[in-house]
Image (cartoon, rainbow, N blue to C red):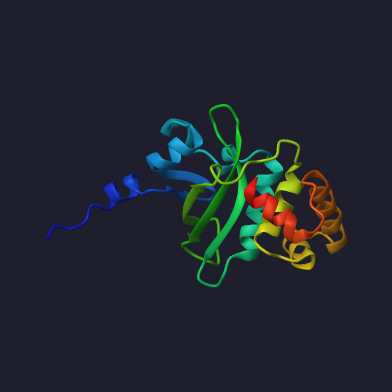
Length: 182
């Protein structure tokens, strides 16, 4: 039996994959390029920031990763990302691993799964509303969301109320259901 060709496995994986160093994309596979509507030249060597709707969302996500990384260096969430071609926003499940948990952004491997077939981004959501929505989907309470985002639970409740109004949801479980459906 011959040795497996890890490059072929990386390139043909059914999800988008990125190898990173200091929040720069060192390498990525074709699935990721297709998902983001980009060429290799547009992404390799670039900051992950080009995949985010705003600079603030890029910064807040980076801080959230550092704060939430588990002892083994693993992290996962769902967030809104931005395609390169057309600038379309879409929900994406991102999971990955920092190679050294003590230096979360130094080096890592990250996977990206496009959730747009199951969940649409409501155009009138603010960046903070998108962030709160993603954490509500994870099942976090206002207190947990506030701690993760370094804001008060009352502020979280204000954003939750705005989301409930925008999605015409009378309860948090109904809001989460509507967020999941898009």
